[in-house]
Every structure is written in C-alpha cells, then in structure tokens.
Image 1: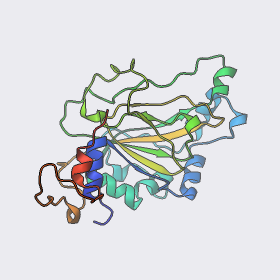
Image 2: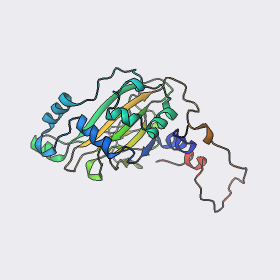
Image 3: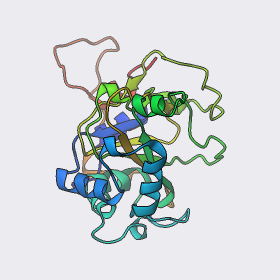
Image 4: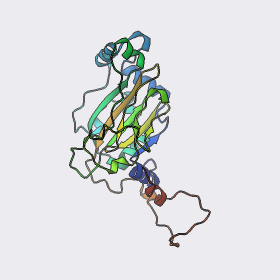
Length: 264
C-alpha cells in the first residue's frame, strides 16, 4: 500500500492531468534500455539508417492491444524493470488498477537539426493534439512517458498544457494553436517518468541540440472501476469549518488548493 499515490498526488493529476517522477529510473537501467533499442553514436548515422538499425536490433516487442501489462515484457528486460519499479507500479495501480492492459506503445525519436540539413528536409515540431478523442468511454487511460537520457531545453522536450484534459476536442483540431498560455516543456534528468491523462493536449518540440532525443510511451487502459484505487490510509479528510473568507498564516497546501488551482 505504501507505494500507491497519495490523495494529494491524485488531486494534482485530477487538476493538471499529469504527474512527474524525476530521475526515478537508475543509470544502469537507462543504459541497458539504450543498448537494447540499438542506440548508436550520433556522428556515425543518418535518420534512415538509425531507424533501420532500431527496427533490426531493438528488443522492444510487438504487443497486441488488450494484452495485460503484467504479461507484456520479458522478465529481466529493462522495460520489465521499469514497470516493476515500486513507484511506477504504485502510480499505475492507483490510476488504472493492477489489471490494466496495453493499448499501444511506441518509441519516439526526435533528431537534431543537422540531420535535416544533411537530407535537405524541413524540420518541424509536432502540432498540439489530444490522443484518441474518438474513444466514447467515460473512463480514462494513462500514458507513461519514459526518458532514458537527460532532456535539455534545446532538445525540444514534449510540450503540454496542464488542465486541458478536461476539455475534449477533435484530436488535431487544436493543431493550429501554438505557444498557448500556460504551456510547459519537459526538461528533465535521465530516468524521469511522466504520467499523462490520455486527454492532455501535447506535442513534441524541435530538437535544436546535437543529440537524439528518445521518449518511450506506453498507453494503459483500465479493466476495473477507477474508484478509490489510491492509498486508503491517506484519503482526504474535510477541513474544519471556517469563515468563507478566512485568512491566516497557514501556508500548507491542501487538497482544496490543488483542486481549485486555475490553469489558463
């Protein structure tokens, strides 16, 4: 029970649509993951060859949609180790349950500017979008983002707009909107894991660095009712009654504060 999310973390996910666990996965597993996907020294390859290299050498398995997460990755593989991490497992169980299934997974690569110049092709960012808005269910999926390397500002980390998961739109109908008020960009250390509500507006940025940016994404769907799955020992307790416009010196952030935070 101790690794399940707290009520405060659930409130943060409810309000913003995301949670982050910085540098959660250790260097050894990060290195093992990069080796398994066929990471190559950047100066020795071009885009086409690198994709071919990954397709021919990567140990990432093909998984049929609906496969239980618990049966998706080989024992002792870096991906199995990542999803067996106590914090990752606790967060997943708290949001979509212990019997969740995989919708899909994908390894995203964002190449540096010099590769596009070499190939005389245009370098573009990914437009803002909301994933799978054709899904009519009232439940929600989560998307696990794993970053095996450091992501600097120059690398064009995933941008996202907190709170937008509460507004359903046509998937790419927001593509024309750029630099939205309140948007953020992921800048993180190697081993960081992010968890997004599947409806959060997001998109990949342009990589202006000299290194390839990797991001492995897994979308998970629940098979049980998503109700009170988090830590039952830390459920919200109502605040004591007080005047409507009460002010004091108490600076503790409450669940009320988290849930009523405004996002542009």
